[in-house]
Length: 451
Image 1 (cartoon, rainbow, N blue to C red):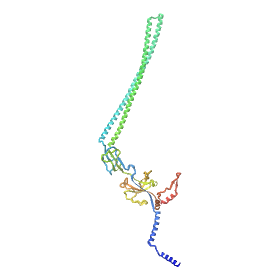
Image 2 (image 1 turned 120 degrees about the horizontal axis):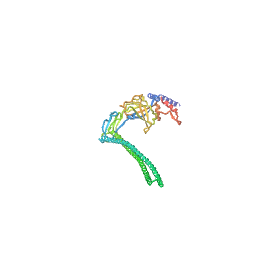
Image 3 (image 1 turned 135 degrees about the horizontal axis):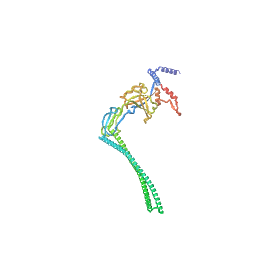
Image 4 (image 1 turned 90 degrees about the vertical axis):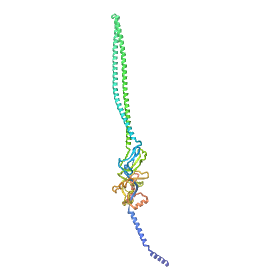
């Protein structure tokens, strides 16, 4: 027992005599300090949450985006007045075209003159028919009036004939009574045979006059009926001639209208052929010349050149993922890095970035591009540094963008990234009743994350 206790005592004394190297102790202290500082940094150091996106510079107005200059008429390229890169003003000549037929303008002018002559002749015909209608109407009035007068005369003759028949009947009655009286007297021997014969002759004469008066009345009545029918025929013929003339005048007016429509078409064709010089529709720079002077035929509407208009307001369109779209709204601040412009960007610390520029969200598209990405338009931030000049910032320049969200500790951001959480957690959520109920847990977490 004594020997065993002594061995243990010697072993303890040997262990106390072993010392750790100074460098190891210093390294251990440094690791402890580093861990403490790292933990403090993760809790204290702020981090700017961002949503990345890529895109390019475009003009805000659709009228100021690249547009094609198209041929107005069929033809071939004769002369180019610009080359790629030329700066043009609205109305400056771009290219001259020529038609396949060198005499097309003369032919169109001759056709137009013929159409104009047709219009003049149609107008003269309409005027002549108008005069004829007025003459026919006047003739109708006079003819009808004359026919009415003849009819009235026939009626008067009928009246006179009726009176003659009445007078002849009265004379015939008187002659018959006289003959009866003479016969009675001769039977008594109071008159002569001569008087009876004269009375018989007088009665025969009066009977003949009655028959003649009746015949005259019948003839007068027939003439009156014939003149009445003639009046109606004259009136119908006059109306038919007037209606025919009116129909001819309507046809003439229709021909004149068709000729005027054809003249308008001829003027359009002639105007297009006369404007074979294509001019710039807007101020800008010629980006690309499409048409070639190789004799190829160009159809109306084909592209001749592409012009990039001078932009008055440039914006940046960036595309973001659909998962990040709900966190972007109009007015959100954005940091932009333009291609070709020297920049040093720190996503989490935009304040120390170099060569980046500020912007504000102008609009977020209402739908995606069919691939789950949404377009965001960013305009310059008036409270930040101005964007580069048009020399560096042209339409189509690529750009990287970061939409700025909340400022949180670095530790929280690392924890969020490791767990795949979104940058912003909603503080409210809808209920079945349509009202929003507060999520206290999310609220407290958000308040804790936001300095």
